[in-house]
Length: 218
Length: 218
DNA sequence: TTTGTTAGTATTAATTTGCTACTTACTGTG
DNA sequence: CACAGTAAGTAGCAAATTAATACTAACAAA
Image (tube, rainbow over all chains, first blue to last red; front, side, top):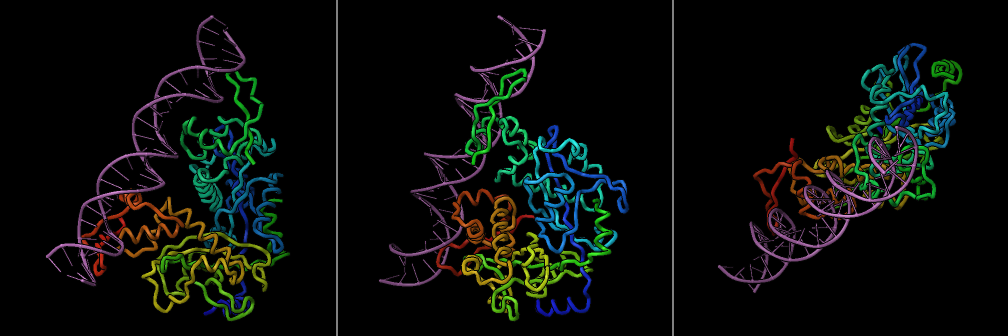
């Protein structure tokens, strides 16, 4: 059967379609941990469980637009790193009806999160352990965490988790948390040397040597 | 607005849903080139252009199942490496109606392709140049090529493009084509040494030293 | 001035990668 | 049957990265 025959068959008779949603895994690093935005469900199914923010995809918006809308509606944030993750299509992933969900992940620096939202972030590690998560959202979080772990080393996504101005110990900590391992200070600095720009500013107020403040190059 | 309110609003009033399709980027390495399976469209839109095999997702099948179905229906192949790529949701990607397409890529060893299908494979490089491709299928091919290039070095996907029994020059060639660069023989062998198992067999019939035949370990 | 603490640099060992050159084993030709 | 041609396979070393440790620098507080 050709694609064309399929279109005809599909449009005429069995005209049922799945719903399409976008779910958002919003990551940040808080208190030296990778954290995710979750809200407790106040309705069935999965009443009381934690779930990711999500929206249905409108006929007049792209997937990326839907993801940005979800982000903005739920957190008020915009202009942050956002990337498509994976599309989930298990038959019973939502017990109410067939919903195919395109997951996205986003990265925000801790400092950029409004105070009203801070309480909604949970450490990814713990969340994935305790299994109190609605739908297949645990899989989405795990998949996102994995994607980030892979991309840290060959992209610059770590910078998306740090403010515009940052210190190298700060940045290194982010790398370490995302990678899940300690790095060597000297080597780390050599490696990112070409991606950063020193400023003339230093941290202050700490009871130890101040740290130079940098910005991302370009 | 909560997700629940959305569900209600969505189901009752504006009940229109996009169609969901799966498109398959089937790669192989033929004549020292990365090639893709394409068929010429015999219908509008994009009449005469080359397009990827695709199917609509049924209500009773998962996305992975739909991808396998597409593969089997179009080529008769099964039990090959298959992985989800990316989901495409531009508004006008299909001029007939709103179709969201989940792309998958698959890898087959040249030797496993039935003769009837061999003519349908085109070098990815050329295809992406000449822009004779239907829909956004060119983007899908490019995205798949990129994904493979990335995964070659830290996974074992290259083995999916080689028969069960293979020589090291053969395998190295696959790596080189996927990565788009020459590799050093000795280093290559060191690196994959723990992933392969030597057999007692050798190639024959060539007018030079025969090559030992290996299998994938595990 | 001393201590505690973190920032930042220097140095060296171990490993991996880049690269060249060699030996080995076959076929076909004189 | 030697020799040329060709690709398989191995050895070895230089260059670059990564792993690891030790050091010096700059602050606050006692």
